[in-house]
Amino acid sequence: MMPWMAAFMVTAFGADDPLRSLANVVERAEVVRAQFAQEKRIPGFDVPFRSSGRVVIVRHHGVVWFAMQPVESRTVMRTGPTGSGAVVATLLSVMGGDVVGLGASFQLTLNAAPTPDVPAWALELTPKDDGIATVVKRIEVRGRRFVELVTLTETSGDVTQLRLTGHTTATNPTPEELREFTGQRD
Image (cartoon, rainbow, N blue to C red; front, side, top):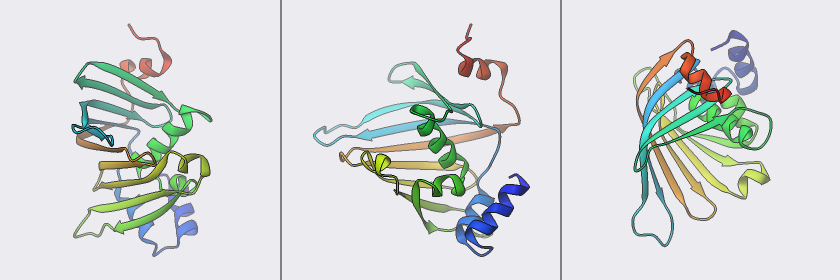
């Protein structure tokens, strides 16, 4: 974590604030790679929609989802000030435990704070922003060093669970990963 970020968080949340302990626990690597398994339940459907694959999260660039099941596909989400870029910024904040960034658009409730003996944590995000609140009812995030489970409950009643496992980190993205964000793939 950048020293200025830690100083800001102490000022914004207070030295004893549990959210500060969360920000200190979650890995803040430039690149995080993981396997994912996603399950979406939609009211009226008996069987959930499932997908799985791998994800690459590159700070300041975005997220690339490589779905392997049920069909192979690639979804590139780039950072930016508007549209899907704002969604990506929220996703990057969730995945990086950026409580300062998330606090701008969400009411944060820490349901389980990390401690030295029990590093697990659970954070609930409730939209403060009216635009987000038209779609998102609640986001629940759980993890330890990394985000391990994200549950998105939509106002429509749809519920999506995203499980992340096998996390690895890197200081820099590979050239192939960077090409995903520039659109200059082979």
